[in-house]
Length: 112
Image (cartoon, rainbow, N blue to C red):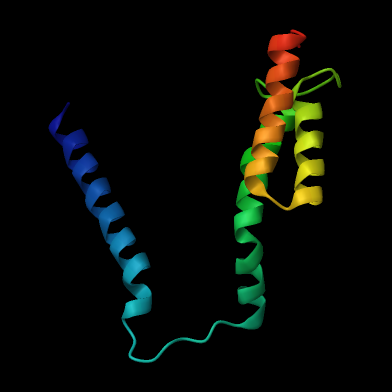
């Protein structure tokens, strides 16, 4: 590693540390609490769902960077069963277990 690249590495580490400290400590600076606007409060309610969809959707609809071209993929029925169980029971653990059970049954049992 050259001296210049080592300096850039340390500069990046220090800059990232400063950004982290400032962004996490930003709300501790003032004496009184800052009221959140109503629109921001509403957006923060759906942020976890949006993050979950952003992670799960590509796993269901894509394979190796390509959109699935066939419906005969074990992930489709597993996702449908998981959704049905969630809307029936409203239980996250039951959703995960039922979806995984269908996925394993189709992949190991039927060779999909």
